[in-house]
Amino acid sequence: MENDTKTYLHYVSAAVHGNNALRCTVTPKVHLMLMHVAWQMRNIGGGLGNKMEDWVERLHQTGMCLRNRFRRVKNPLVRAQAREKANSRASHPNVIAHTYATNAGNKHSFSAEKVDDTITKRRKMQRDMGRYEAMKYFDEEKINTLTWSVLIFDDGKVDSLKVDS
Image (tube, rainbow, N blue to C red; front, side, top):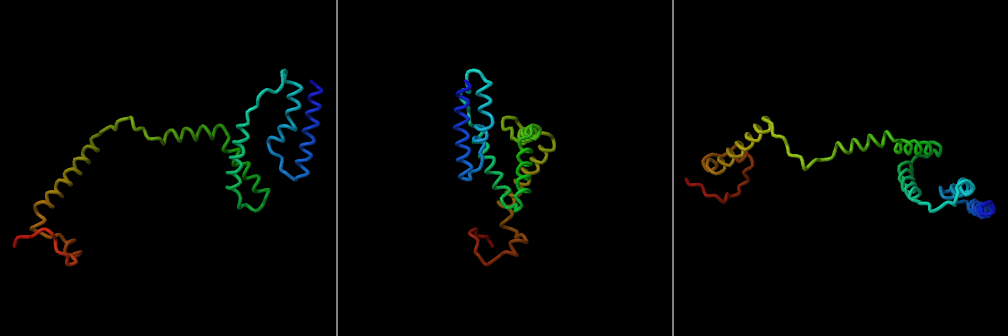
């Protein structure tokens, strides 16, 4: 009703006046109350209903991140323009879609089995043969011959293996 709207505007204008007298910034809630609620009270039948404020909390988090990101920019106008540009870019639908597509493409698919091709099989066989030859050398030939690295890095320690002379 019109009387309710007038009463509401009276209280909101007093609240905004007090907000300005305390030199507080105009928050999104204050802007919403001052600029949009009275129109909605007049034009939406049945009243305003319950309003969710998730967007305000998200706006606080986004604003905090942007303030931290651009806090070292000394010129306030450049800082404000950079913050707005970053916020606009981050909330653009095409950018969001591209980000989701990129993130989906970077995820590991652990359920899919790896495809074994001939190159992979050949490389695995070469690794296994190299390991087998290394173990064979370690078990059998180490006692009979010394490698060049043993000669260089020999620091006089006695090996626990006894070599038969």
